[in-house]
Image 1 (tube, rainbow, N blue to C red):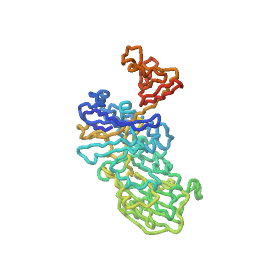
Image 2: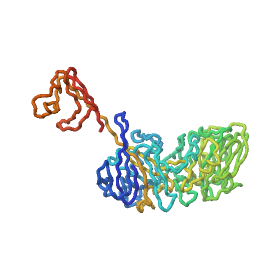
Image 3: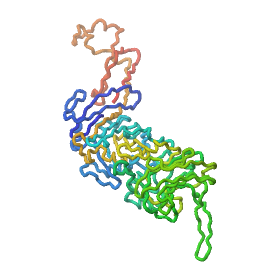
Image 4: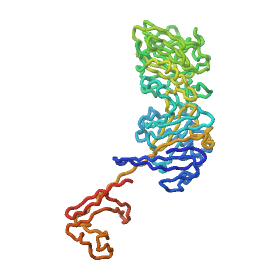
Length: 580
């Protein structure tokens, strides 16, 4: 199916060769076409057919359905929409986009490797089933978004045959290989909690291949806001977390036990305030694995009247990493410190100062004998050192804390990634690039999902480039002809069922013919037959079989490829197959 979206629409029907069918039931694919010509087109030579106008005359703003829907607050973005965004969002959210931690219904979600999530807003296209086939053929959908004024708002979308929609302009070789990804927290599923601080989920999603369990500690001291800015505009993308006493615990912590010979990298975006809520120490914890596991505490007695015994967390001298923010009371205020220790050697690298209230992309990594901190894609600080002993421990891994009530970090974080490899300068450059047109900070070309069976296309990427996908110039169905519309194509599916009937002809039946050509002089009224058919060796030939229903209506005619001689010495079986 190819289509353009504009002020007028017509349907072109094209025949697709059936091919070789070997299974039952099976699918055939029909190619459907839309364009903006006002005249109706042929369908196998028949004129005057225009499905759009005849079936969807009341919906002049879209073919099938095209709509935009907002966040879980269910605001109705455009009152002119004929689809209720609340109901549509509820349907998508509950049927297709259940949280990854929940069990999925295979009958609904068996779409190969589809990755599921919803962002704050989505554009949805629904192909009317029964009109354009039963569904969409895998790998056949493509759409080009048009924009007469801005090249940054033009893009092509294709489906990958696995249920994912991708922006074809991304070069996927520029992404860090996912096999090295040990943690990815983007917080984009937390848009639901912008205004619901007392109704938050007690987890965030790790969508790396490791699928670590990320628990929220003190959720009421955590809030969610607009995410990182695009690096060339003032717009923001996605969702970020703002910590103010709350923090995260990542399990299993053994996934992050980087030993002395391991290369690894922490990539994240951070925005720090002028002051920290806890400045009893000169630093606050960003990523920590140097404090003892749950229940392993050092007993510290107190003496004197009115006092009691207390327990404090035990700090390890051996740890794979400790990344802290040096607050304003530090000798290196507003900088980031990255450490690793074997208990005998402790290596540390410190960044230059960050400006409060400004987003930075940060990479802290160990690669070979180098400890590095990169800021916004540029190498900021490096120390050459090594450790001779092991650096692993059994301690927990915390984000924004060390697991105690002291030293928690206040500020915003986003796009947190941990890799078990050292990153190249090109990879770091792409991770720090969140440009409007082709930002690679999200490390994915996927911008939404396609549901083949239901014929539903959803563009739900959190990047602002896709906010008004398929919706016109400003997202209000303002297409301006086709100047701000879209073109595209897909192939639909239709299931054909193969039927089989066995016609049994007994030897005593049909041993005659009604063909008038056997009568004398081919006279249909003659009572005698030609001499050549009066022999006892003559048998009639079967060329056509008619199939009748219970009302004796002729419903199908089967033509044999070659005449079949009717034998009168044995019963005969003829198998008839047809497709519907």
